[in-house]
Image (cartoon, rainbow, N blue to C red; front, top):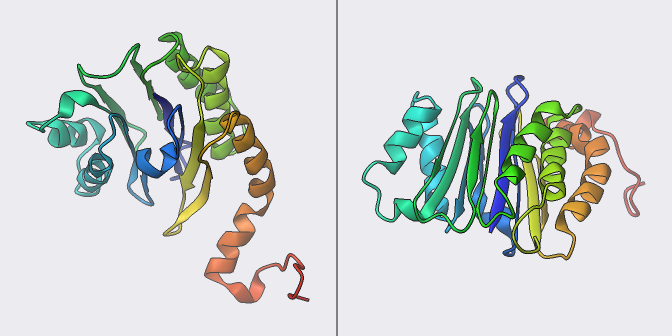
Length: 222
């Protein structure tokens, strides 16, 4: 029901883009922690696993060791599909025997992609390649990867929700965009990103030092 990409640009930023045929996929599958890394829990999703993977990374384990620790002896683990990435760019992925339909995963340098109920395994290959070859900010590269996966066939059925989140050097998600139900969620996510990205850094400034933050001149704030 889902395909996703988890990547870093080597500056300490980590982000995830994900899409699915089910509603509000980003609410369940995206797990990010500034200064630590990222994880995705998908297929028949257990959101607790994403938090546990981040905890394992924070304890000093690398991605492979974190994944091994979280999955070892875990009840129902064969129904899960997991990805994890540390700030060092090392990644790991797990697809249990109960992963739905056509499923696939690709682990690269600074990027890991995975999906289930796919039209073809080439979808995940296209996602990973799309991220590696895209340019621009991390958000743009993550969304380009989703678009490449959709162009390669996407899921076996239509996707209905999508999300994109990034953490950097502050204690919150500097980008956190969601389309929870739509006939064209990836296209709408592109529209949201085009509105958001030019303002992203200003909202960080507002959080850190509102005395120097720009005003957008909204009614009532003259």
